[in-house]
Amino acid sequence: MELGADGSHRLFFDGLPGYGSGAIAVANTGRVFVSAYDSSGSSRIAAISPSGVLEGTHLWPRGAGSEIAVGNDGCTVLFAKGGGIGRINACTGAPLTDFIATSEIVYDIQSLKDGSVLLALGDSVELYDASGAFVRRVAKVSEYGLRGYYPQEVAVSSDGQVLWIAAMEGCFISGGELLRVSMIDGTELSRRYVWPFNNVTGLVVGAPGLASIPTLRSFVLSLLALALAVAGTLSITLR
Image (cartoon, rainbow, N blue to C red; front, side):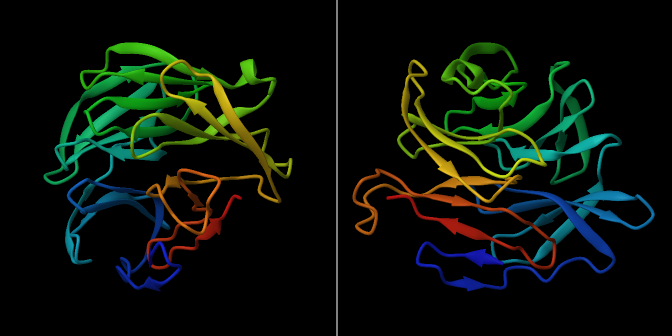
């Protein structure tokens, strides 16, 4: 399903028979990529056009996790896996060299407009350039007094100045902290306790200047459940 900023929704893609989804990512071109799995354990990456037409499917790399993101070329998909982050040309199915190696748990991957990549690793959010070279640590959740929490999902405002972090404590603990921090120096700007969630699978920051949310420069949609045929969504409005 495609959810509009006004709360409207429409069917975008009716799914692949026999497959369930693992992750979804949208390219800046509007093309959508979905990792899909069947009951036998076979996995594929599906490319869907901006109009909702299936363009093709390719074998999904063995060991690929549930976090994916699309590079600025509209075809390179980065994915979490054991030992790091891999890459594949999801338009052709051609494997690419790994992006980085890491022993940390990869919670989220976000491609930025300038080609750099934001990674939520362990309890930190780090910035890497397009080649996979480390640039700097943007934020560390434990430094905001949230020891034991981790950055399960992250998103950046449209002007690139604010980092949003959905900081969670664990799957069996209800609630978490929604943090706003400066992308420049990591200074905490605000926080909001959100519940009854114990698992957040997506965080999307909307456009600034919404009259219905006068105290914020942006609004947040937390996408809590995704399925290949049907996407379950929940909108969080903060005031």
